Length: 60
Image 1 (spheres, one colour):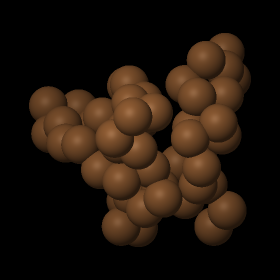
Image 2: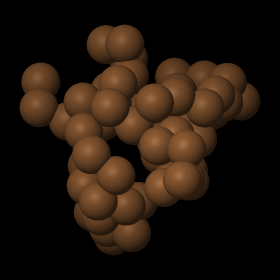
Image 3: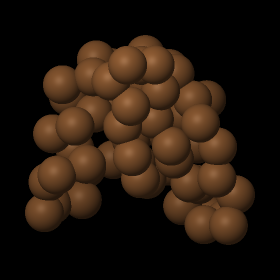
């Protein structure tokens, strides 16, 4: 995924399925300067982490 697409997903009113390492996640923030996204796992919303935006996948 690229930064622009991650920002579009973050701003979307619709639910767009995104995965990180095969697990469904929600994007919370996008940092263009570091190319990182703050995400939390759908199954465990308390589990948050910063990941490379390029590691996120919506085409599965």
